[in-house]
Image (cartoon, rainbow, N blue to C red; front, side):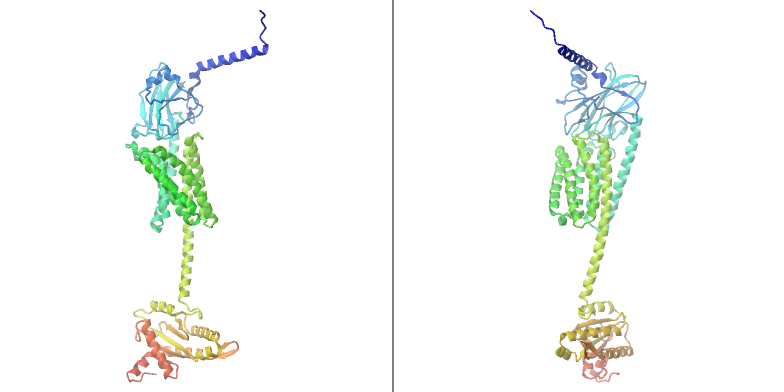
Length: 594
């Protein structure tokens, strides 16, 4: 039998495969060493992604003793990215291995969540497997007093006295989607970061409370529902952010964990409902974009239904609708605002600006919840910042809306005033009509005042209409009205009652001698020729004079008295005018003065 030598290229390939196998075996033997995290103070915490062991307990019945067994240890895997649970209520077990190089250290593990239902921390275990501290159990399902360091975020504090390798285990379960981006911190550095975060939270809350209070005052002043919807929007936004930051669980429901969890999931839905109501009213979508208004109404019904379902325990449905409603509602509102802006509603431009900022923030948060982004803490800060900016811009937009409404109101008032003047003005001559005279009399004929009413009728006016036509007659009437105004004071009222009959309400003029002088001036002025198309037209006049209040206590009574006096002037007097008191004396068989 003849043996052929192995080709050189095949030999090299076999050697490379053998070397790769040996390296893999060596790597597997050093798995625990590769996933150690060295504990040392840094400016910020050390992210554990890639060095964080994890497996899912499908039975939900494993205990720490089971996890510590060789079979339990073999189940841990080390993903390179943070773990996203996506509404998975099964327990997750995490393993963290730390190496301390100094003699003493005060450390904590931070879980960037305020809504994990239950967290059980075990350890730290030393190299011999001995637990150095009792287990710690906390979570949103437990009173706030169970939180280590009274931190809004879930943390686990552990102190180490000697150098060495230590292991901490965490059993986490939640009914709400979580991102377990765990990190390890020096306690002092973590608390310094917490103080900065609380300062940022306080500024954000201050802005929102200021906007809420300001628009609550506007609601009380203007009684417009848009301010009520803004208050709802701002109030539930504030409550949602307080829930996301853990302040609801800390300050409002410290001993009622179920209530804190419920607020965490329900408040965002109510926030979206308030935002939809505000958008519909502020943008006047029923007028500018009816189809957008209908879609938002349907979305509002869906969101409110999901809130009711969430109160009944259907949190998965509520969270899904909330995420969909936040993005869908923002897109619909942007479309409606764009339509309104193109149609001339300028405050919609500011609404678009504010909503764009908020939409970007919500979009980032949803991407974080879906696992696309892995910077949960920064995402929450951006959401908080976006909400504050949005609501400030919305408040400014409301101020712009107030200015527009005031301008529209001024224009409406001016139009109403013009219409009122037109309704009280004789369209031919420009003086008051009968309604205008009644309006002026209602204002002037009050107890204690002394005025006079002169009723004037043109003589020889009918022949002008008959011989020259109504155009000539209209020109004479216009000329008569102008001459009457020229002979009167600005406060006196001239009215055309119809045809060739005029009335004059002489204000604060009651003495007989002065009224006679006025009547003579008026008669003389009207007797002057009137010119029309090169023709000379002449008219004369008869005046009846009644004085308030002796001849009548109302406009109707004064007109009746002046009419009787005018008829008397037409029948017998040569002066062209007569006082009602003259007529009254004649009726009594007496001779009146003059």
